[in-house]
Picture 1 (tube, rainbow, N blue to C red):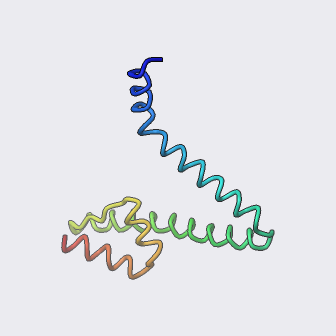
Picture 2 (picture 1 turned 120 degrees about the horizontal axis):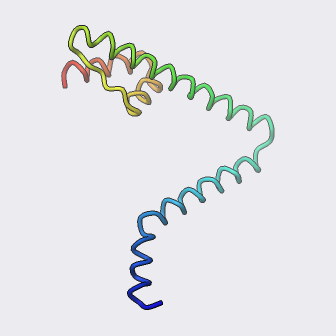
Amino acid sequence: MSSRDRIEWIIHLKGAFPVKVIGILVVGLVLLLLMAMDKKQIQKVLERLSVYWFRLAFAFLVLFAMNIAGGFIGVYVPVNIVSGLLLAILGIPGIATLCAFAVFL
């Protein structure tokens, strides 16, 4: 393999390599944490995660309804992951924030 072939191979891997390494590190860290926890701690963590997944799903339902209702008066609320997370984390103040963004921006 010539030096030019090695350079082309490194350039080819440049974009994908760090993503794979980060993914492997995250999976390894999660597995390490799961091995260090006992059963009750794992159940608590999974329960909290399920609550946030439910809140995120409900946030997208609310965003969809806001987009449909806002279409009648000409105000469109964007349905994307940032809006969903904002609504899931903040709740009712998140609805007010999204409405303010939609009206004033």
